[in-house]
Amino acid sequence: MAKKRAKPTKSQQNEKLKERVIAMHESGMSVPEIEKATGKAHSTIYRWINTYKTSDENPQIEQKRADRKQQFIDDAWDILGSSMSILKDRIGKARANEEAAAEIIRQLMQDDEMPDYERKALLSQLAELNISNIRDITAVINTVYDKQAAASGESMTDGKIEIVIAGDMKKWGS
Figure 1 (cartoon, rainbow, N blue to C red):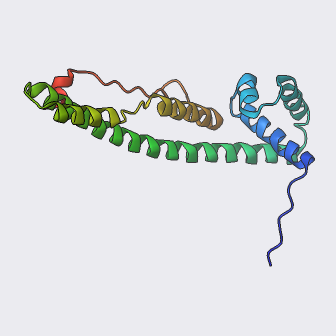
Figure 2: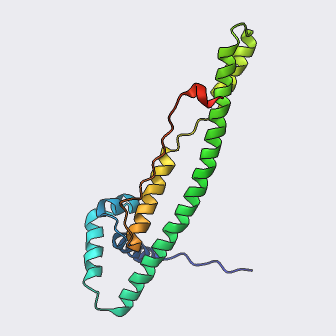
Figure 3: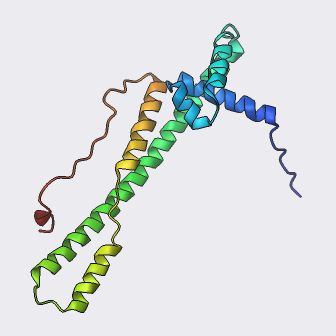
């Protein structure tokens, strides 16, 4: 029978959170961002950061800082990769749904003598299509990329992703 793993004590949980907060700060996150992400008061965050900074002479702490920072960078890359995969799937689904919507609209506009039951069926199909808003996930990707770039010491000035969909919807259907 497998042994149950003991839950970390409150002190151990607090120490892990403290290390995470310091890693977040070292990666370039602001105190308000850390406060929002962790739910800890800004005074606690400042105290942890300042306590940590005064202990720089200790090489073990320096190594721990470097390890945590690298773990944060690695985690950010993993999240970025997953986010890009999700975004790719959502864009594919959004494109298919937009094409289906354009086809339904074309059918509705083309046949003035369409029976009401067919028109209602097409309108029902149109209502069921989920036209995705990909703005939210691109915002997440931008944020994760910026944090990863800051942690890695890379430039963040060109990290913005912008997607523009323009044109005449009638042309999309052709």
